[in-house]
Every structure is written in C-alpha cells, then in structure tokens.
Amino acid sequence: MTAATGWSIVIVLGAIWIGLGYLWGRKARDSEGFMLAGRNVGLSLGAATAMATWVTSNTTMVAPILALEKGVWGMLAYASVSFGLLLFAPLAARIQRLLPHGFTSGDFFRLRYGRAGWAVFLLITLVYSVTWLVTMASAGGKLLEVLGNIEFARGMTLIMVVCVLYTLFGGLYAVIGTDFIQSLVILLGIVAIGGTVAMNVDFTAAYGHLETHQPSLLAVMFPAALLAIFNNMLFGFGEVFHNNVWWSRAYAMRRGVASKAFLLSGLLWFPIPIASGFLALMAGPLAVNVTDTGQVGPQVAEHVLKGAGFGVMAGVLILVVLFCSMASSIDSLLAATSDLLVKDIYTGLLGGELSDRSFRKVAAVAIVAVGFVAWAFSLSNLPLDEILFSSGGLVASLIWPIIAGLYWKRCNRVLVIAGMIAGSVSGFLSYWFVETYIGALVGAFVSMVLTVAARHVRPSDFPRAPAS
Amino acid sequence: MCGPPISRAPPLRDMFPELFVHILVVLGLVWTAAGALLLIILLIRDYKNGKLW
Amino acid sequence: MTRYEGPDRASVLTGLAEGTYYFRVRQVNDGRPGPWSEPLPVEVEFMSRARVCALLGAGFLVTAMSLAAILHGHFRSNPAS
Image (tube, helix red, strand yellow):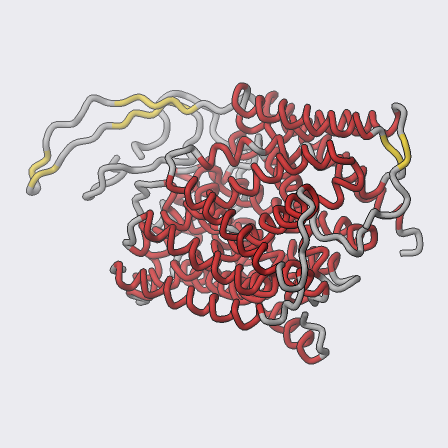
C-alpha cells in the first residue's frame, strides 16, 4: 500500500467519524446527555459499544501473536478475557439500582470508601487509563507505519486528532454511535479475512505440519500457555470492574438493559481471539516466514488475501478493521477519563459548576488535555506496554473492594483501603521482581484477604442511601 | 526446522486432536458472523420500537 | 533439513517440543552457496509441571472465590429473580 492510500483511508474514515460525531452530538443538551447519552441507550447499541471497546488493537493483533507462541491454549486463554464482560453483567445491574443518578465509578468509591478510598482509586484508575490510551495511540501509529507507509509520529497524531475531535463534538452519543459501526466492521472484517484463510488452507495438511514442526502449539499441557491463564483473567476482571469506561456505559443504558447488554457483549467478544488468532497457526503450514512476531496476523492475512485475488484491497481491508478496533477503544477512553476529570476532580474536588452552557467547554478542555498527554507519552521512548502490564496488580486489587461495596452491608473501610494499597504495591513489585505472570494474581489475592478480613474485623455499616 | 530434536526428550503426548482444532476454528468464525447478524437484528428491533437511545 | 530459504534475514521459531536443536545459516550469492556457519545449539526447556500446577491452583482459587462472591451477592440481593 502506498502512503497516499494509507492517508486516504484514515482521512476518509476520520471524516466520517467526525461528521457523525458532530451530528449525534447535537442530541446532548446537558452534561448528562454529553457524558451518559441521556441514560437511555438500548440493547443493540449497548452491547455493541461494550464489545467494541473491549476489542482493542490488542485483540486483533495480539491474538495471533499468542497463537503463534502459545498455540491453541494461547487462543483459548485469550478468549477467556471475555469473562470480565460477562461477570460485569450482574455488577452493572447492581450499579444501576444502587446509583441511579451516578456519573462515574469515582462516585461509587467516594460513597463507599470516603475520600481516602476515592483518592487511591483515582490514582490507580488514572495511571491505568492513561497508560492504556497511550498504548492504543502507539499501536495505531505503528500500524499505520507498517501497513500504510505513514511515518509513526504523523500517523499517531492523525489518529489522536480524529478521535479527540469526534469525542469532543459528540460525547458519549458519538462514541457509542461510532462504536456500533466499528463493531460491525470488526466482526465482518474478521469473518472475511479468517474465512478466506480457512477456505484457502488444507486443514489436515496444516495440522500435520504443526504436529511435526511446532508440536507444542497443539499441546494440551503447554506450560508457557497455561501459567498465565488466571493471572490474565484477573487482570481482565480488574480492568472491567473498576474502569469508568464500563461504569459510564452501565449508567448510560436504560434501566434493565445493562446486564443483558454486557452479557451479550461478552458472548460477542469470546470468539474473536479464536477467529483472528488462528491465522498465526497457519503461518508455518503456509510457509510464511515470520520475521517480526508482532506482525504475524497482518502478514499471514495479507499473504492469503493477496493469493486469493484481493490485491491491494487486502491491505485496505486489514487496515480498516484494525483502525476501527483502535478508534473504538481510544474514543471510549478519552470520554471516560475526561468524565472522571470533569466530575470527580473539577466538580467534586475543586467545586466547579457545570451549567447547561458551560459543560461542553469544560468537557472539551478535559478531552483535549487527556488526548494531549497521551499523544506526548506516545512519542516518548517509555516502555509503555510493560507499564501497562505491570499495572495488573493495581487494577486487580480493586476487584474485591468493588464486590464488597456493591453487595455487602457492612465492612471495615480502613482495611479495604489498606487492601487496595497493599494489593497494588505487592502486585506491582511481583511483576517486576518475581515474575511478570503473577502481578494481577498477587494483587487480587492480597486485596481479597484484607477485604474478607474487613467483613469480620470491626465492620461498620455502609451509608443507607447513596449520597447525591 | 532441522528435524526432530537430537537429544532424547519424551515425545509430546496429549495434543488437541485435529477435529477439535478444526471445529474450534470454524466455530469461532461462524460465531463471530452470527454476532454481527444478531447486532443488526437487534438494532432494527430497537429502532422500530424507538428504543435505540 | 532446510527450514527457510529466501531474502529475509530473520525467521521466528515457535512451538518446539523440549529438547536440544542445532541451527546453522549460510549465504547464497547468484546460486553459489557460501560456507555454513557454526552450528548454534538451542535448548528448549519447559517449566516444571509442579510449578505450573501450583500457579493454576492459586489462580483458580482466587478466581473461583471472586466469582462466588459476585454470584452470592447477586442472588442474595435479588431473592425474587
């Protein structure tokens, strides 16, 4: 693909999202409309946005990498990350019932655990959210460089500008609306690509090749694939349970819709790592020489699609699918993180006012600020992926405090907050000084122990009614 | 690859059978396609009932 | 046995069973092959099963308890459903 084609695709898609963002953004008359799409989102849009947001470039690019390195179990383990969405279904129903006028996940932490708990939560979630956003932006830049021949800094800047603009114009309406379109592109694109590969491969011969030359990929007891399964699952739980990206959706959906939508989104997400991952298993059988593990998915896809007569459209299709999976996550992160800044910090901490006229301006500043920080970090040489992975212990330490805060009647707040801190620290240190694949597990475990203790050691009642 | 290992390690037992892997992949693709179809159907239904957003 | 022949300067290997493998490379100019390099031994060693099982066990425990806590809370707060 030439750089000109690459630029055209991104600009055309970008213009569509921005146009739609502006159009849909006019539905938002107040801050509730802007941040929570009027609290009336239905099942189809709700399920699609939850699924699309969780399909990051990681899902479509990393699934093949995991399949290449860890075989069948690699794909299945990744598919289990959908359990986070499934388990959020009952939580979302509870959130809607407990906080019918809630705005952010910060509201919950402030209500249940006071200012101290709220502060610890904000620190964890901002670190994680910004890091996630930065890795998405970087992945976008790299993708445009490899597939579209666009220089990294320019490509990444273009993606961020597009996403910031349509999020700014349209708020959550724009995010959810574009997410639906992007989710269809992702699902149908994966079927088109995967289907073409599946139809152009002699499966028995491919299996035979793997059996001879890459037998571990077919192994049931493959340590490398198995050792991180639960760690990654807990990482996923922590990510989904705590982050405002998911809480804002729970608040945004019509009463009674949220749990069904999240359940459906988890089911929609589950097959994606398998449908996109198996491409990498075909690399060996198809004699595709992999030189860069990180590119195995697009490499095999392009090889097969070109062979099947797609020509230049092969690269175009792949780029469009990947761009959609990235945009659908970047916009959600921008919106949800700026919501936290606006609601929790600007109005909550600093006592600012949010009138029907001022909310757009405040939100715009927050979105641009978050986007700018992410852009700047993306240009730095920091090991962003490592930082993201090492935050597993931090988010996993929030699992039990959230369960306790949603379902229990009484607990010892200090112990729970201690669990959040101890879990975060121990999980973080475990990642760097013991093994990378136990960070989330340790964080969740330590926090679990302290939270369970909080139920029995001098517990006090949670406040009866949610504070307005 | 330069052929099977030279040192003697026990051969890998317990591999996922071919049929299992084949069905897994096909199921993954069909399920993904069904998901897209379901979203479209739900969208039309929500739109007709005015329950979109 | 030839693993790869072509213009690329790298080749990723995955999925090997445990054991020791030997690899060597050589350059081919205009159909004339140069000398082979020194064989490079590569040792593939898996983590002990005991350790994997310990990890799986611990992970399963924490995950199962978290799941139980959610389901318990959910059904207790929704007695009618």
